[in-house]
Image (cartoon, rainbow, N blue to C red; front, side):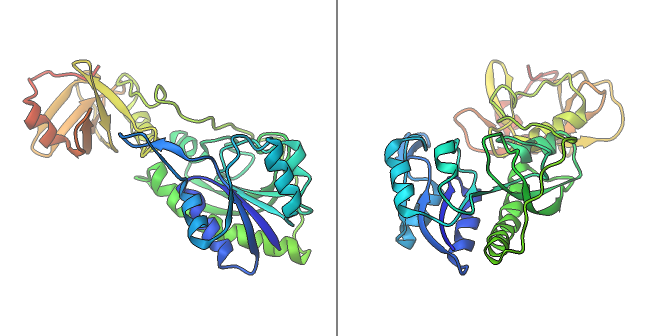
Length: 309
């Protein structure tokens, strides 16, 4: 098939590379416009664009997919199908009907669970033990289209959203190619999603990533892992922001107050709302490099009874 691939961030790269290695012809790539990144806020191409440029493929970067110039070019290209992985923009109805086999979306959840922009993060935050990826036909509703295929993936006890997404990106890429193969051969039929089991996964904001030390240790553990690497879990000490990397809940109830930092031979513990503590791993003070929590505390010369706000 002649396909136009739509995707933007790093997790979409595995799918683009898999398509380039497949029997299908990638005739163009749709990705988000170059965006400012890093401390210098320099405009950089998306990870997907970099791969497309290296492969010599036409790249389309409309501000919005409903732009007339993009829709006209899409009609000229006349792709058979448009596989989509984390593109980051809403595909308008005028574009949905152009490819004869439709827009085939790879979504990182087991639909209808976790429809939305952050399915992996919400699966970890909810304490799910199993998640996966689906391919489905895009329609106007948010991740509501009929499903072609799925793969499952266990969520490990220490998995961050970055860890899990790395694995799903690879497994999902294989699923996406297999789905296109099956559609082309006429042996795959999309099945409507069930009406029960629907849950939603909106993008996690910086406010969502702020740790409330009065919540249970288990919730804090899940919150930090869900927010790693982005948007990054954080707290404050003396009004200064501190980024928190994955923590480890410690068994046993203590009398350490929520947010209070306690040093021991193995590093630092912090009190939580469940009466348990969590052991800090790495931290990163604002404007500083990432480091082990114990090294950070020594450099800061924390006083006894210091507490995160």
